[in-house]
Amino acid sequence: MTTEMQTNAQVMTRVTVIGAIVDGLLGLFKITVGFVSQSHALVADGVHSLSDLGTDVLVILAAKWSNEEPDANHPYGHDRIETLATLVLGSVLLAVAGGILYDSVQRLLDPGVAINLGIAAFVVTVASIVSKEAIYHYTLHYAKKLNSKLLMANAWHSRTDSLSSIAVLIGLIGVTFDVMWLDAAAALVVALFIAKIALSLLWDSMQELIDTALPAEQIAAIRGVAMAVPGLRDVHHIRTRTMGGKTLMDLHLQVDPRVSVSEGHEIGCWVAASIREQFSDITDITFHIDPEDDAEIDQEGPSSLRPLRPEIEEAVRSAIANPSASFDLRIHYLRGKVDLEIVTDAVIDAVRLRGELPFINQLRCLKSEI
Picture 1 (cartoon, rainbow, N blue to C red):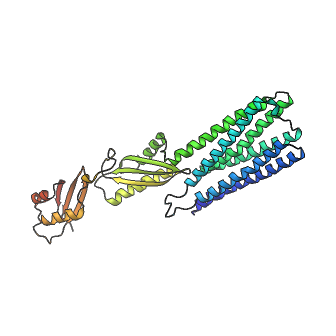
Picture 2 (picture 1 turned 180 degrees about the vertical axis):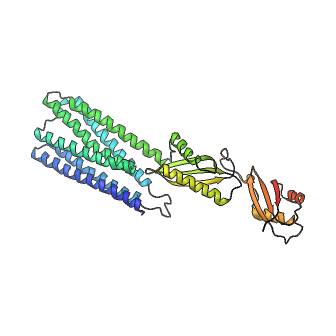
Picture 3 (picture 1 turned 30 degrees about the horizontal axis):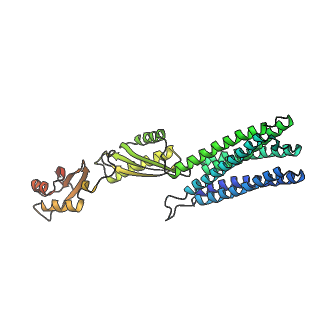
């Protein structure tokens, strides 16, 4: 595991463990007060807080596994584990929203369900709001820093308890002033808000799983950065996808058709380095060097394949008066044909050569220099 991956896993684990400790202490506090005040509702709420430890364990395991290095079976890494875990957390949030929604409807239909638990309920509710809201902001800070949808989902999972407690507090205030429907209305609003967040997380995760591309404006910005590299003529076939907050990209780079292979490759390396410098989330870039514009061509068929060097060398040798003469070839595959430069001191029968190589577009014979 690389240093960056180790650091990310450690940060995600530390943040989640701190949240788990708060969940555990808060759950025990609610259960204890519930037993003392003989409140089954408060005991149930405490058990719910303890159940959050299960999702905390899921986040810790996903943080560890998703940051493992690529291997033979997973050459692109394990980032999708984080995406799957985010789907699970999003589903949990949606289930929580459904439970709160059901409970709020029941209370609206039967206002007598609301129970005033006295001062103990106020103390526990305020403690839950303060602690869970603090964990939400703490987790959210690192979720944004690491660009982790998983931590983002866990942050919102913590906030669901905070929002639920706010709804309970509003309900307790409503009971105090004989406005019995107030807690149900507050819970209904909270349920709809949580459902919206859950659906957003689920949608983003599903888009990632089906390899949805980056937004068009970001693609345009990437293209602008690439085109600033000297020697690059055009950029096309830009394809992107995301994995666990990271972006993978491949693209075609058009260069002068007569530059050397190494120069074309170096231009590509500069393009990749420039893109990574401007877009830190793009971690994997595969580029293809093109000698001409093939933006309208998705895949060349077998009929477009032209002869390779061995066949061309054989034809050139048969067109040289002295078969033992030395020569060098510069082959340029352009416009569906071949531009051929022959560097030699021998005499070339150009007519015969063109007869044997009908795919030649341009033929130049150059004298060799020592």
